[in-house]
Length: 433
Image (cartoon, rainbow, N blue to C red):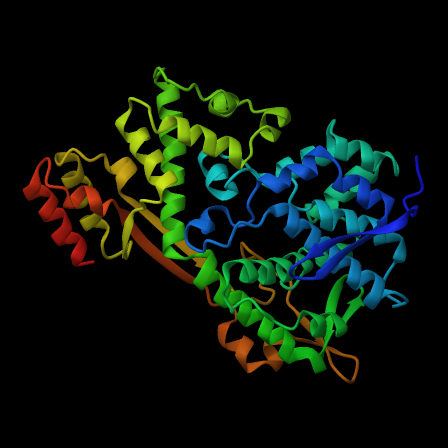
């Protein structure tokens, strides 16, 4: 075992476009950054297919993870130090959990997880707890240290104050990705006064609270998050790319199970298709690997796989219309039949995609997604839930917004080949949505 408080002989820094610099003085943190599992995050984009909509969105989960670590470091070292409710013995645990919280993300993670029924949080735990370089570095602190880090990330650690630093309605994870994603997409929505928020943070028993004098900075954060979700994260063009990506993976999975003779065998996917993926198999998958296969499959004999891969690689995406699942369900079934009659497989060329977000909520016992509220520390020392003091936040509290769109290949429907009358009928129905 080694002393986790050992410092480097000289501080290391990463120049960062969001935080200026990311500072590393602890040898343990430096060693974790150098592991192969953490370096893999350089090859996983933070925003998946969003780069096909906002061309600057090429940043990685590596840079985001460093950013979350830096925010937690600043909170602990510059705000919480000396505060009565903060246990400084949890400092290194908090820093490690912040750095490693996204370790298990896969390529284009959410689409990838949906097709193969995977959970990146479970793979994060496996990387931390199983035979990896990360595990060996953590075990150098103590045999139980990897388990403690995993518990913080999975939100089961006994000290909920530590958990809340990286997992709450206003945490280091969200504060970094909102600003970082706004910077790289070039939008203004994600900007808020993080320094002000950090100045009014206070550790209070099992969670972080905010001095009431900083309420407007917290309001700004909530609204920034709301805008980013609807203007960037749920952008319909990005969702179109995700639909095609998902359909490619579904098609490859179906062809593999049908013993289709691939020109380029999906070797890296084999254990996924067979349902026995190991951690070693999973760690070999990153976005360059996935894109290599897509590039190879552009030449496959299977027309659907070939077309979908070319669409993704060349950004020839599906068009979309607004869709009401309740009121237009029968029309969707009619469209599916017309697609089949026109020789277009609706399983791969007609898709409903839904987005939903709850920008802020207070604690509602027994509900599926219980959320601990944001509390303000009032001048008299009492705590007050944010929406009780803020008319802006009260207006959006507990209000889930959901959006549905129907995606289809307009270019195929406009093509003169095949059954032209059927295609015109399909287009006329879509125009009525």
